[in-house]
Length: 422
Image (cartoon, rainbow, N blue to C red; front, side):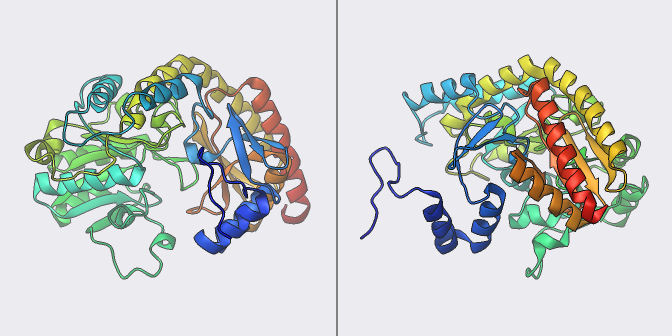
């Protein structure tokens, strides 16, 4: 007999064993395995603020969620904005003008200072990486793109070409974009690249998230940007993970005065409630899309529910920004202490603001620490591009008590893992 969802969407057979069975049968056995491992046999059932509730009644402090929950779960102002839109017009005709997307675009351009006036909305980070590269190639008439060793820009085929780690391209014979990767230790790399062939764009993360919360050297990035711009290439800052105050600034690149033509945003842009990403760029980069707005479109681009969340999310982020600065200072102190106390296991602590990486002596040591953290009620994010590193992504709404709790759990996990791997 086939189970039928109720009118509210709830499933009468939604207990944990059934969830894992469905994951195995309909999604991926590995998703079932990793989910069962992380939850110790329980599944996520509810969330509020910094806490996630599991099906067995336990709660966990969420310092992970791959940087989406900068405002925590179910931020009241964002949820209220989405709820209001849900009650009026939850989707768009795609034929009539969409006032919710128009307001969100104006709000976002103003939020970044107005120097980048054009906006394209997607749902995931890879969406806006794809359109940024497409526009750069069309606007310049050039094919080649320069990306950075250690960078991560998504897993769709075009974005995947920019992503550096070969793990994500295993089994693929090639990607459709002509890309060269430059080493952050080489200030001359972009100058050589633009001499070797015409370049459409330089794409970089000011702070590499998936590579272990690694800030790029500011003096190198400044030289790269100047060399790219001097050769007529667009400069695109991928801040999908590090922007929106995650690393302290609205935009890391703009705050540094870098001559960027575009900033890519995502993850917390929908307030941790709905999916939303954005390309915010110059008129020159946007020109092909201004000439033909159907050159690159998506059924759910500029979706009213997502765009309704944006103004509320940005307002909440700005209200919490001073608190976020204080949290980052506390996090500095806590991580420095953990590094000092566990030098036999912790090789380095990296990152900026509320994006931090703890680099361990081996992937097995990192795995052991992740296992201990999950069991003790602290959710963090692994780094697939740097498997020795675990990533901490505390929300702006975290309290000092939350940070202290996370530090205690980390200390205990490092102590336990150190008996085997230290």
